[in-house]
Length: 438
Image (tube, rainbow, N blue to C red):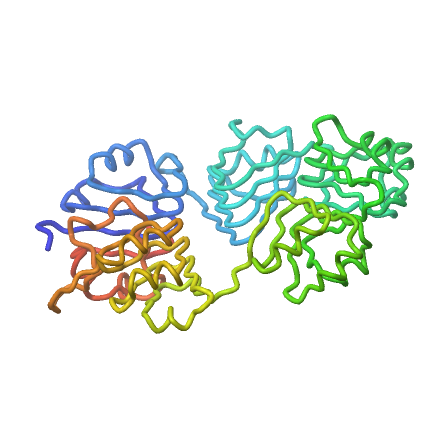
């Protein structure tokens, strides 16, 4: 189909440092998908002259004579002072990376560290320093070198003051929570304990002592006196009031139970404050308004039929007519509306959210647009005679997505799991490997 051949390479590591231009000059189009691309000064010039599209997570430039060790970790990984690493190692972490203090010498031996996740590193290490060549697809948090790391969300119980180190400096990345009003914060102050954290959540009765444990950069959430603190999401029903009392601060979301006894709640609830959102059914809204409830956002729970997270969905008249409380279709790749569905039925019974493509007929287009939210494209369906050749959804040669990730199937003969029409369309060389030297 092409006058000259095409070339597609899909691999974890692609080493181009010793490639020869004459080996690839005969290709009209080239596509390289790789996690790590190794280049030299010479190979960069060759790649710039070739008709190649490259999709890579990170690029490492090294001399061609250097022997590189590749290490891939799927999950969390730690670099400590005891970590043994060869020089010119390329590390890929598909998870979270924790770097300990005193690891500067070990880090110098990494040619590149690529992280698809979050990174925690000591303050003494600078992301831009020569000792740390790293690319991160996620968050980066910095902790003090002399800090003691606790859980990102740490609940301080009444036994912690007894176990805390004298002069200890504790790092809590997100939230330090004091739920128990009997915690002896005075003992922590006597030990000169300090917490470094993004937010401190504590009862109003402990504010005076609590603020002495953190610096002025820490955000404060104060639970009003007399209110109990409920950590995490909660269900609004009689058992919540029985357990926590009638005055509650919910640090999370609150959802009304479907069989909620609203009359009983009116007599038991004095005050409920919610840090997150409140979720109710539309029929419960009037009863909810009668409660002393404070919240930032109200969300309605869908009570109709839901179709979600499916590769393709076909909607016909029978489906909508048998969905009296409406049909919600969300997070689906492809949605097809049957020709037997009227525009009025679409407006009355259908909701489309976060779908990639919706195919409908001309007379349905305006109704589909009216009930769509975050739909990437609405495509008009047309009647056409069956024809041999490529499937209707096959891309044309001119539309081949050379600039987008093109995933090859793992294992087996290169390209063996591609449908024949795609191999015919591409008409060139297909290579699928873990590591490949060009």
